[in-house]
Image (tube, rainbow, N blue to C red; front, side):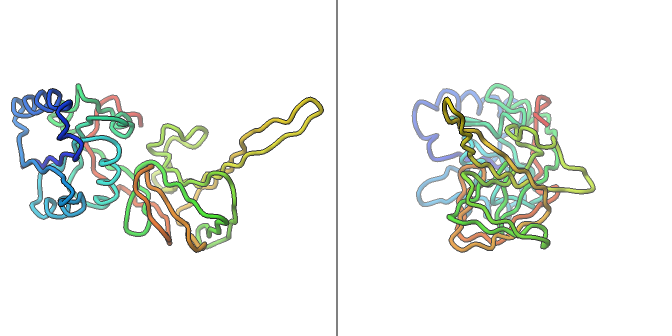
Length: 249
């Protein structure tokens, strides 16, 4: 039995045609299952916890990046595979996994499951990146040394899946699983004619990071916010997920 979890915004009538089309394909492919619709009285965490106890064959999230990110933060380390039916915007996570509205049903049917490394912040997990905010950040890297930063942007990147990783490695070595701390500072270069602004990036690989600062916050994949985080580490093979042939990794 499959479980489908629909985001709250899908009650808008403008989504009915695409939902009806997808549900018809699901029925045709023999993928029908239990449907759970979120509401102000039914939180995603509660629904996922209840449904995982039923041991579904697949837990499928129907919606955009927001609900997918929240689901990943809850499901990290679980053996039930995650599937995605992308509806609404943005849907960058689904696109990275090679999934779109047109091919999602056939991808669920093909059931190509891969294990993906996640980042873990205390008890929650993230797929792509975690942005750290605070007035004066103090971070301990691999229980070895401290870094203090007031840079304009400080984030932890899982380069395994982050298409914006730029010059980061495409994937950490299997025997040396790492995340990357990326510190971006704005540098003002002065000249006789005019001053120019440039961005300077420092990239630090790590396996474990401790947030020593008080009152820091972390935002996971742009949607899930954690206050006063303590540790960030790699969760090897932390997510089983269904992917398409055109996935970006």
